[in-house]
Every structure is written in structure tokens, then in C-alpha cells.
Length: 169
Image 1 (cartoon, one colour):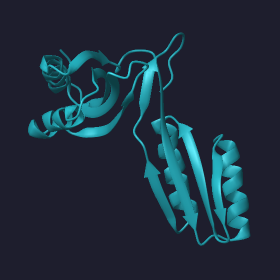
Image 2: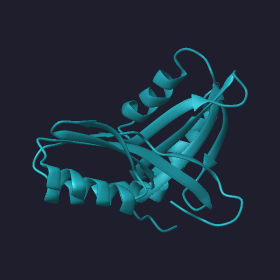
Image 3: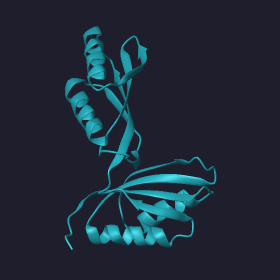
Image 4: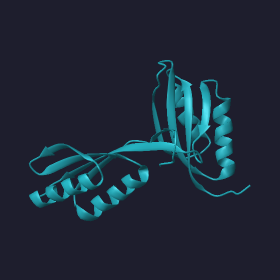
């Protein structure tokens, strides 16, 4: 078995109960597994929540994570997204402060290029919302850091669902 360290995704269906998120995140911290990203929300069934977890690990550790999650009573189903065709997006907010008119014009061009939405504007600031893949959001953050002096970044975790046709991350 190849033992390469890479980013991996798991989707979990779990009972929508108090303490389940804590137990699952506790499993990761207790075993010293790193949670790269974790999102959770209710599904079409209000008694079930769906989690999307990203982690970086080797093959052996990842198999252990899946086995331990499958053993938890509150976990209904574990889906390994790593090699599946999935639709996966994350939300990113970038606030640029102390910007000039020229900066704002450039920010609107960036937003248009990345199909983002300017969400709020002030005299010397602009807030933009990006909903795209984590890789594209990485590129946006890199660009913003290079182009603007005073930025604030808030990033949500990825959410994903199995694709009907083709792969996108």
C-alpha cells in the first residue's frame, strides 16, 4: 500500500444531537490527527447532520480515522470523498481596508474575474464574498496579500456532495 501524505476529505452523516461535533473533533485531537477543515449542517432530515472534514494524512492514518469514525454510535455513514467525483466549495470573505478609489476599482475587477460578489462598501473599504473551490480561494488570498496592504480574511470550511457527472474540487 502506497503511504503518501496528501489532503483527504470525508463526509459523515451523523445524528443531530448535542455533543456529536465535540466527540468527533475530540477523536481527532485525542489521536493527534489534524483537522484541516470541518463544516457541519443539518440535512433534509432534521435528525441528521452532514459533516465535511478535510485532513492531511498518510494512507494508514486515514484508514484508522475512517475505522474509528465508523465505530462511533452517533455516526450513521462515512463517505471517503478523496477519490470520488464531488462538487466541493467553500466560502471566503475578504475585507480590504484603507483602500483608494483605484484600489476599489481593482477589487471590483478581481471580483468579476473570480465571479465573486461585493457584499459591503465603505468610504475606504470593501468586503467581497467568494464561493469557490479551496484552491481558487488560496489563489485569491495570495493575490490579495500581494496587491493590498490591509486585508482581513474569514474562510469557511468546504462542503461537498457527490457529483452526478464530472469532478470539480
